[in-house]
Length: 466
Image 1 (cartoon, rainbow, N blue to C red):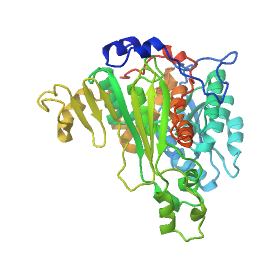
Image 2 (image 1 turned 180 degrees about the vertical axis):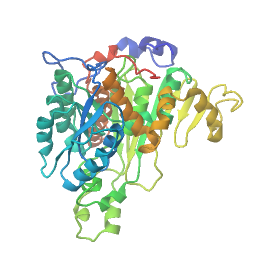
Image 3 (image 1 turned 120 degrees about the vertical axis):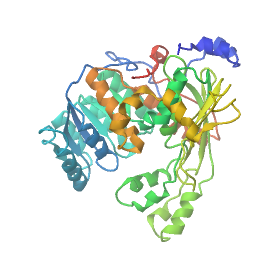
Image 4 (image 1 turned 180 degrees about the horizontal axis):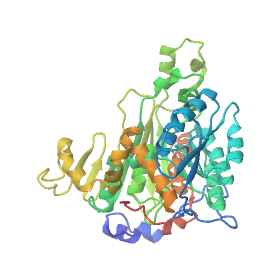
């Protein structure tokens, strides 16, 4: 598909040309002064690090997510698992035992293990000096660990969200630019089959010019409250009592942003408004399932059960994002992208195209869905999915985890830019603190910082990798 320039988009669509005349720029957040790069810094949007044929890998956090990252990457040629760190000894040793016997030869036999202290990961970084670090810990540790990993000479790959405050995001960017190290948020959903196919269809112009997206993370996680001393629930439950906004925006938003080429030449986030419902579900669940003197009943759950935020982009597109980890409702990420010639939607997967598609539908008034979608998948499946599905289908989340990890290693070994750059991780994660501020101010509009310092205008669109 030929690139659609910002001017061309506005001329072809019904959006007001006044947006173009205004020439608005993303505003830096008024609460910080991170508007200049330091001496020696390098813009990381299209950054390709020197090739790493053999990659020494370390892990911080061997709980729910980390072991899976190591077990898959340990199978790939040119990798060596060199260190594992966690607060808990049993988790470290369990992970190390599982990894040591993976692959041919002795390449994963010498795994250094670190545990027993909240800062032991720092010792691991300084002693082992890995090439890359996977960070799979609680949210508040993501930023400090990523920053220290880069300062110690390692590329860092971080579970979502990348950070929880705008200040942390700026520090991550400054460190990445200064050290010339990748810091990629591992948004695995961007590698789902449906998401990859929709990206491919958007690039081919199948639904015309993109106008609107809908994203969500609606997932009832109240059951995690059973984890009271260890595990995700032991720390995540406290987040609902401290913050009121969209605490986990990136699973739904990441794919929509890449469909729209957000932060890559065409467009970028401009502003956000956000509203939350009353906070009722967690309080009720705690009362129904735990004694009155239990610690969960001592918390005041201030975070609204459902948060709805609306993003306006610089050329006038809109994105709705919803988050709800409390209400009794089936899982959904929405994953809807509306164009001038059709609509692609998820949960369930369904497609509507103006003029229909072959003999599947005559027009856009009925969805292509169910068994009829097989012909669509056959025609538009992303080439990366076709190449990797057989190898990754048994990995987490229907295979998307494996495709993501494979691409990380492939890009490092071949000296290619990452599929998700550090600025995308910050833009998508920034919905968290911006939504909190908007909710606290009665839905007041919040401007996105320009984490790229205007360099997004020359950043290449994400390619359709074969």
